[in-house]
Amino acid sequence: MTLLNMMLDVYIDLNVTLAVTALIWMVVKLVMARTGIKLAYNLQLALLNGLFAVLILSPAAAALYHYLGTLQMVPAAASVNLSDMVVAQYIRGGIDMPAQDFQAILGMRGQISEGILSFSPGIGGTIAVLLLAGFTYFGLRLISSFVRLSEFLSNCHEWRRSGRVQLLLSDWALVPFSARGLRRHYIVIPSELLTQPEDLKLVMRHELQHVRQGDVTWEIALETLRPFFFWNPFFYVWKSEVERLRELACDQKVTEDKRIDVMAYCMCLLRAAQAGLKKRQEQAAKRVTGDIAAVALIEVQDKVLRRSPSQKLRRRVEALLDTKQVRPHWGVLGLAVLPVVAVVFLTALSIQKPPDWTHDRLMLSTIVNLERLEAINTFGQRPLR
Amino acid sequence: MRKRKSNEFLTEVELEFMTELWKIGEGSVRDILDCLPSERKLAYTSCATIMRILDEKGFVDSRKEGKTFIYSPVLTKDAYQSRSIRNLSEKLFDGTPASLVARLVDEYEFSEDDLEEIRALLDRRRTDDAT
Image 1 (cartoon, rainbow over the protein chains, first blue to last red):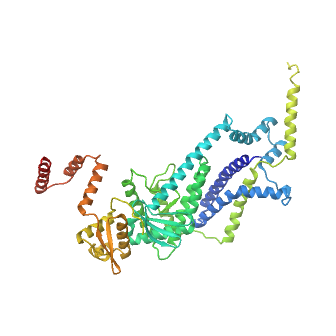
Image 2 (cartoon, helix red, strand yellow):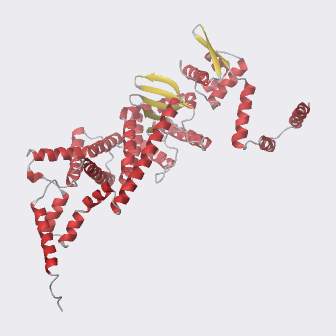
């Protein structure tokens, strides 16, 4: 197997695992909503980010598992492979279909993969062209956004510096936001906020909480992955969940401080939204704000297929006023999370290409050969009347 | 020293500060703060930051007197008014100052004295152009 084949396999596996993980998350969310369990937002965010890390590492974990299998450190009976299971089901008579058709379905992924890698005319070639075009478009967009963000940051005025966090003031920022470079974190504050000391204090707490939560790093990671997952709708579902939860978690964490008045915080959000909208109208002609790889206090830009900024703000205020949140012991949480992680890992493992021929696969191959032989043998026979 | 950030225009707050500085000619952060209405309740550090930004943008010059920075405007109020009105005319009125003036005349309720003054201004401009 060439390196390209391997990379394409990992890519397909990751996309399928992402879809399954996103579905699992949605089911968990639905169950929590139905049972009335309201898990604290920072825990939900940690779970979501943790699951994403598991998902990204799953191909490596699956490879390690196979490697351990070759060293016979993992029992052979513990092998989990979806296509092996389907073949076994077919051999037992659970699937009623001609063997040749069944084998064609099983080999479809391999055929398409070959088509993609060899740019052969047909489905494979078309998919390869679309993937390359999408990757190039989103990759260039990512680079351009980073350049714009970097230019934007360099045009800001330095206000203060504390450790690795640099506070910047901008005339152009619609709303306060956090960004980061390789080593430094940046918090950008619209300069007019200097004249509103109370709001400034709340905004600073909010943005510093984003830095503490590592939200900007996650945002950069997700944006960097966008060119790879651009066609996968579950990637967008996942990203919108992360965006929603990180703001709710941040709001919740800031208002946990007894010195912070929740009403004052809500009013601060409203004022920030109002100021952002006013500025957006003023800057309508020029897109000056870097809109990616940064985490804003509040959204004022409409996005395609997303809730409107006003709906999001309303949800945040409602969440802030709802204080009945559960914070289970980490041990209990760990026990609840373990099955989910196991399902993600099993999914990653089960969708991999089978490493070698199993007994059932040999049987299937024999059946296919027999069917072919039978077809050849009937060529010379007089048709039945 | 930090590099100068080129920005031709002032934000609302900066304009407020510059207006006070134009009035007093030159002064420290404390002097400007004293000129602002008492209900503004601005922190000294915030004012100092705004003045530093104005310095970076090149709208003011600063010199140190003891431990205090004394700021003086680089640009006169008239020069800034001209720059702003030119920008407004170019961006919003498609570079046709006549439409800007027309809008102004339509929207504002001018007194007889104002109109007389404008007429005098136009006459003077015509005479200047003729000579």
